Image (tube, rainbow, N blue to C red; front, side, top):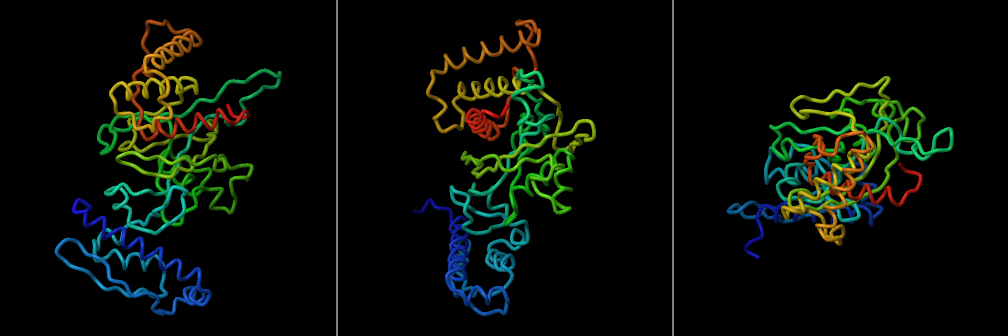
Length: 338
């Protein structure tokens, strides 16, 4: 209709062309061989829309470096964007439909690939029993607060490290890169750079645990979830001051209650971005349950019930809370976790 943004039309048409091009090269063995040679053979002639008032443009696509081909497609729309980092547009299963410059992902809230990661001070797989046969303590989780100058969700808290996968980047590499950049924890990245993988004994990064799809009005992402075990005796967390205002180790059960309280507040305000699957209980009942859990937690840590703790009022990033809900469901379905 007339309300469909012209620029979005331009972007999606270029995704469709890439999808068509991929079908040509994968269904025609000769085309695939020629693509590997990169001999410049023309594969496709297309006419694509341009921004309002600029009409259309005819483009011929040949056997060339695929990233160069994508940049060639997007240059007429925005030559600056066309030279930026490329990201995969995906379907709900995480299958790649095409590549596009990262700014378009945020401008038009396009479904893309990313990672989420819980960082703990002991393995999430080692908490079911101790040497005496009893249940051992759960790990502490590294929680951080975003700076007040952040453009998106200033001053909110997060129990995860997260990030966007670049085009073609394996999710494991995204996870290792993001935790190195955000928290200065580089052991996993070093293992991968030295030819190791997630199964290497000295790799603190888990295999991919599960995937979940997060869809809100500001972010749509197929999230691959990981866990990172920080060796606090040899690793030091160092975050960027312009990104993080505070960070610290928080007991897992405290994070559970703080997250639930944060979700309750969003629901009370009518701004919880959940799908409704987790809204089956009456909000009053859920609030009563949260308060009961908070009292039980304070009793466990010998805290006066009337003494309010900072974590009681922590507001978490809504996207992170959606992943947290998926995380709790995954933990519930795995008896050997936590």
